[in-house]
Length: 249
Ligand code: BTN
Image (cartoon, rainbow, N blue to C red):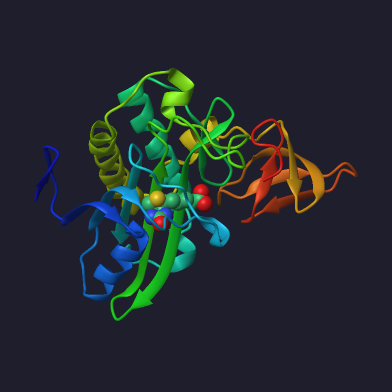
């Protein structure tokens, strides 16, 4: 199948407006859609974020979901989401020439604001584990609602330049396809690049409401932190607020 000049084996669906590309991919998965199926939308009316939050998805952004049937247990698939954040950074660099960072575990940040969120949802069917990897990038957003302004950024707000969402989508699909092939061969293949891009080490973080200092990223992508009393912990998953980025969200 050919989309935006890209040849790929798995199907690609495109709609101007959908409720949520993650929801659509789940429906396609239930009908037996193959590994790598993509759903792209120019806007979403009910974009979903982590922790039951909404993800604002106006026209001018990039919203896509990819169906993954990785053929491995869920524990081994955990590194796909941080790896996808690396793919987003590579795509934004290639198309817009901008250097993004990653706020652990998988927000892509630019100029201290959240540029991209990633929501991975896991389920099983008769073929085993499948994942819906959903990526939303704020590309041309000119203004966010007041409550999101301290947190959310866009390529346009950072650079003053408009970007064709299709151009970024095309390159992101290439990067995701490359990533997925490499990740299948070695689940930690993006660890060093992730570590280099992660903005948390050396900064204060809040673990729940407990302040700590982020030290680094462990082999399993957990966040290594140190509390003021000197105790250390690896945080496997959860919301960590990064001071100096978006305040306490
Ligand atoms: C987050 O930061 O909370 C995750 C946001 C994920 C948003 C993307 S947009 C494409 C896909 N469809 C959705 O409904 N959500 C994801």
